[in-house]
Amino acid sequence: MTITDKWLNTAPTHWTRGRLKNLISSVTNGTWGSDPVENGYDVPCVRAADFDRASRRVDLSTAPLRHVEPSSFRQHLLKAGDLILEKSGGGEKQPVGMAVLFTGNDKAVCSNFCARVRPAAGVDHRFLTYVFAAAYGQGLTQAAVKQTTGIQNLDTGAFFASRWTYPAKDEQRRIADFLDIEIGRIDRVRKSREAQGELLNLMLNQLVDGATAGDSETLKRLGVDSNRADWGLGRISRLCQVVPGYAFPSEEFLHNGGTRLLRGINVSVDETSWKDTVSWDEEKMPTPPRFHLRDGDLIVGMDRPWISSGMRMTFISERDLPALLLQRVACLRPKSTEVDMKYVYWSLRSSMFRQAVEGELTGVSVPHLSGDQIGGFTFPLPPVSTQRDISHRLSNHSASIRKLRSTMQRQVKLLDERRQTLITAAVTGQFDISTASGRSVTEGVSA
Image (cartoon, rainbow, N blue to C red):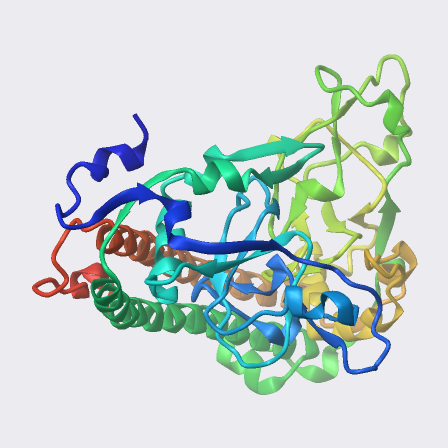
């Protein structure tokens, strides 16, 4: 028995029993077209990357322009009220099968990895969007996935054959109206939490920038007693040994036994993750000592060094050892008593470092930071005692902010869960919307 089967028999008796396909008029595969030619048939092409997954709407602001031949233009053109279903793509944490609503009047098409879904006569498009959201949350799309070469492909025939039950259009509209209001309340709280998290990030970044630049007001705010006249200028290459990773041949990687290799995918912001691990046989093929990681090494991910939550950089601890340094990752070690490595960490986190190197990153599809770029970075350098004081105080602020952000992330996750629960309950008839209120969905999370 599926999750859907559990509620089908308890749905209101006046609702129609059928299948998802009964709610659909047509399904048309999308097109990728060709490069723009500026002849009037260049239109935004909606990809899964252009889905606003929170609101379940299309975001055309990032959709690329593509040329669609006039002969097939009308066949693929989207109109307000169409749904766009992702039928190929997805990933481990984000399964394929999400559907969003197209609400604009702009001319647009969807990509060949998606399909345009038109509601049947007598079906409200907003209600159908919520139905698809409930089906996705219940795992109906996941159950219809066929995976090949790492790509998830949705068997739309199997998915649309899923059993479902639904009311007449007037009641569909009332349910959609109810959900629009209640989900809107949840989303406002959610956006508030996300904005607060971004503000906390901004506050920390401003502290880091000010402290590592020697700004007197920032140092005073942190409680650091420092005379700016005592500061000099440091260069990473003079103060630190910069060790780019070793080019271990991938055909010799082990998946069991051996010494772990630290790769770029193992380096995140302030942490190492050993979930996807490959190893090396040190007994068979010894590695030069400098590529053996040590406790206290500062690690920088060289490919895509900056992600949304910060710079891919962390310290190695005893629990990470033994491990070896693979290419696309760099290691920094002190070679002078003038420098505190935690202060180097905060200096590399500053916007000063980013501005110094970002315009020179190599690689188009995968921006890449070089060891020379790190080594050539110069930065304000106070006495080592002041460096330690600044690092200690920035670490304390960072820990407090991280704790607050963790609380907000838990609240956002809770809101997402309650949002999904409310949608599913409403479109499956588990309560009467004429007497119910979804306000309790945000219970425990104040606005």
